[in-house]
Image 1 (cartoon, rainbow over the protein chains, first blue to last red):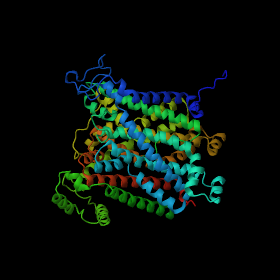
Image 2: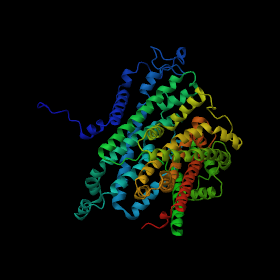
Image 3: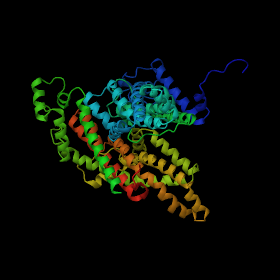
Image 4: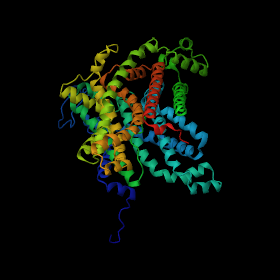
Length: 289
Length: 316
C-alpha cells in the first residue's frame, strides 16, 4: 500500500460489496438517497406547478418524463416524490426500533409471567392487519404526515419486539449474563452492556428491513389518500393519480412505479447481502407486519 | 390430545378478547371521540351532548366496552355515523364479497403455491427454481398497489382480457362477483403464492436431505415414490401453519387490492369509512378482521393437529 493507509471502509461494507447482489443493491440505494437529497436543487420545475397548456404531454426535451393530467412535470415530481415518505420512514423506524428492541430484550431477560403477558399482547396486536391498525388512528387523528410517524413507529415496533426477544433468548442463559447477574448488575445495565452488543447486528439488519417496509406502508397509505397529502409530491399519490389515465399517459404511471420498486428491490438486495455478511438469520416480511 | 386442543382454543379466545380491548381502547386514548370527529370543529356543545347521549358516550368507558363487545357477540355492531344505518347491515354484504374474493384466491392460490414450491424445491438452484424463486422475490418485494396496477395495465389495457375496474354493486349475485374477482384475485395470488412457495421450497429442500429420505433412496425406492410418499407429506406439514399466518397478510392486502380494483368488499368499505371519519364503522371492521384472522389461524392449527400426530403431545 506504499505507506498510504487505504480508505477506512468498515469491514461489513466491504463484505456487502464483495457480493454481486450486494453491490447492485448498495448502488441503487445510494443513487436514490443522493437523488432525494439533491432533488430540490436539481428538479427542473416546480413539482406543484400546473400548466393547462401542457396536459398529458408525452416525454420531450422540456418535460423528460412527460406531464400528468394537470400538466405537472413528471420528472420533477418523481425526483421529489420519495423525500417525504423516506423522512417519515426514517423517523418511524427509529421509534419502532427503540421501543421494540427495549421491550423485546427486557421481556427475554426477565422471562416468566411478565414475558408471557407481553408476548400475548404483542401477538394479539399483530393479528390486526397493520393497515387497519393505522386506519383506526388515521380515522381518529385525521391524515397527516406528522401523525403517521408515531402510529407507524408503534405498529411496526411489534415485530421488532418478537425479533429482539428471540435474538436475546440465545444469550440470556450464557455464562457472561449469569456472571453479570451474580455481580449484582441491574437489569437495565445487563441489557445495555451484555445483551445489546450481542444482538446489535440482528437489530441493525432488521432496522434496515423495517425502513423499507414502513416506506411501502407510507406509499400504500398515500395511494389510498391517507398518507402524504398534496401539494407535496409522493410516489404512491402519483400512482393513484395516474391510474385513470394509464392508457393516454402511461409515463405518468410508469416512472413513480419504477422509482418506488427500484428503491425497495435495491434495499432488499443490500439487506440480504448485509445479513449474509454478518451471519444474521434474516426473516423476510414477518407475517402480519 | 384433548388438553392440547383445549389449550389452543383457550389461547384463541384470549387473543380475541385482547384484540377487542385494543381496538376499543386505542381510540379512547385519542383526543376526540366519534361525535367530535364526525361533527367537526363547528359543532356546538348542545349538538355534541345530544350526540353523546345518542351513542351512549356519556357512560363510563369500561361499561361501554362491555356493552359494545356484548352487542358484537349478538351480531349488533352498532350504528354507522355517516350512513345512519346499523353497521351489521352495511358490513354483511361486503363481508360476503370479501369472503368470495378470499375464497377464489385461496382455492386457486394455495394449490398453485404448494405445487410450485415442491417443483422448485426438488431441483434447488436449477433453472426452474431460479425462475420461480426470482418471480416470487419480485412479488414479495413490490407493494400490492403496484402489482395490482401492473395487472390492470397488462391484462386490461394492453391485452384487453378482463375489465380493469369492478363496476358491479355490492349486492350483485355471487357468480358475478366471482367473475369480477378474477384480476383482484390474480393480484392476491401472485403475492400470497410467493410467500407460501418460498416456505414450501425451503422445507422440501430440507426433507430431501433428511435421513429417512436418503435411506429410502439408498434402499432403491423409485424417485417418484420417494417424492410422493416420503418427502411431500412431510414437507407440506409446516406449510399449513404458514398458510394460516399468511392469511393475516391476505386480510391486510385485501384492503389495498380492493381499493385498486374498486371491488365492493370489506377492505374498500374500511377505506371509505376512514375518509368519512366514521369511527364506529372502522372499529367494527378492524375487530372483524382480527377475529377472522384468529379463526383462520385456529383452523390451520387444528388441521395441522389432525394431520400431524407429532404435535399432539404437550411440549414441556
